[in-house]
Amino acid sequence: MDYISATWREKYVKNVFKMKGCIFCRALKLNDDEKGFIIYRGTHNFIMLNKYPYNPGHLMIAPYKHLHSPEQAGNESTHELTDLLKMCLEKLRKNYNPQGFNTGMNLGKSAGAGVTDHYHLHIIPRWAGDSNFMPIVGKTKVLIEDLQTTYKRLRPLFT
Image 1 (tube, rainbow, N blue to C red):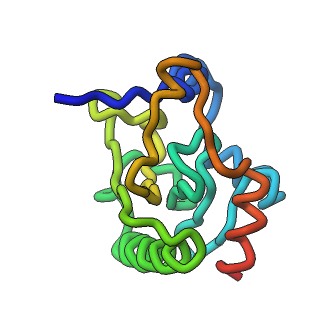
Image 2 (cartoon, rainbow, N blue to C red; image 1 turned 90 degrees about the vertical axis):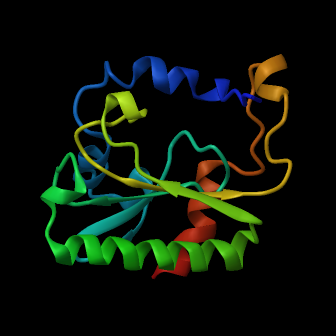
């Protein structure tokens, strides 16, 4: 079995369980979508950039309500989440031209959730060869753009 290290996420992983409050609720309370990296607000859910992305365009969809699992949400919220997933895939395909996607949820600490009490769905664009040895050898993740550039690139597509 091959393993791909994501050492650029070390800072986040080491501190995620020490952080006070919820990153999603904190982003919403800013009332500044650009500072919170929120690129779209739906009726029940919102889309934001991952502050520690695996790849450029790494998005997350989360409900406004602070819920730890989708079965606590109403059908309107989960149906909208699916519609927002489809919208994200469409916008990312057109703007980033990825060769594939990883999408999913990590529900619970043992499942790998960094945020265990506010469920969210990850959408990660993928390209052949997007993993390399820089994180292993140089403890550095190379991304083709910073978060502000990603935000400015994607935000207009969702308005």
